[in-house]
Image: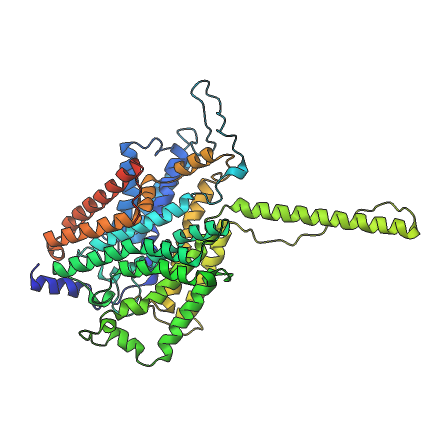
Length: 540
């Protein structure tokens, strides 16, 4: 890479102001639209069962290529692409099902007589996993990984709009949202361990910290490898993104130890979302209270030998990313559990209350008899009118938190609030709220699709049936991207470097750009499917 072309590459991603929030929303709606079409094809026609080669190609086109085209050639007209996905969805709905509904009433059949087979061990509903694998979460995380992998190479081509690239100081862009979404999704995954610890023996502080450091070390190693590669190969880099030596892997590596350190406090926090908002408020107060801190982060010189000045973006943005991570954990705590757990609790509470009322009535009647008033017939008391309660289900939990984050976003950035500008570089309050509102809304959309088309996913009587229903309702491509997300992200980074070192991406036509990008996504998707086929999980 010549010095002139390196300077041109750096200029292409520097001093950008981003684009419109609503345009980003329109572009990212392609992922739920593709998921809806996939679900309709599976529900009505069983198109992806069995998972043949044509089914895999269709899966790739819907869940990878649709997203890739949305952020490139259809970037200026995402509504058109959404329409192209919605039209066949409606057409499929209007047709009669060509096969028996494979996901509505799945049964386990024996090879001998075709009758439903008994589950081994005579499992009951109480034996089902308390934290089931939910297809809509898999689809959300898979789509997030697809758009992330697509963007990190697409940004190097002219077919990718500059307004979607990371902003310099303030503004909103697709890639700014991608970074925050990656952290938010990581928080959802971390919530699973938190929920498990609530129903098991609590680990000691030092054991928890040890485990978090063990998970952080591979990320530190990846960060060091990236740093050495970029510096050693004289690769073009956007220094103001995280700093001279800092990169996103270092930010990710610090999240788990930070949570382990504050874990004793988290036990007493009733709402992780509220804690994330409070952290964001503290960040904003810090930026507003100390005169010149914003200018220091955005405008000051990078003094040689001063590590903080050279990496100030990575250091000062970490509290904001921690807030996003905690908010993701809060959402995860509410959506990873089984809805029936809440129903069982309410039923048990109602039964206990009824039993208590009956005992009180018996005691009153017995007291009246012993007091000499004579044996009076027991007159049953009128049943108490129960106050209507808001359903405590995953769907309504997401409705609640999407509404909360949306209201906070309107307050903070537009109406009656401080009028804050979003800054990914500082990860300020506005950025935290925007990321949380966007991801909660995306989860709500995917959850709505699942609830409408696969309503019986969690009504199975045994694990095997529930597992089969979940598999039938989940895209294999999305499952593969979700399962080995970090490994595929690393592969995407390596392929991005290889492509940029082998060709001048800024000087190629749109047609050539799309050929390269589709091939690149094909390699990543094929790798993910091979790992899924052989049941391989790469833990980093």
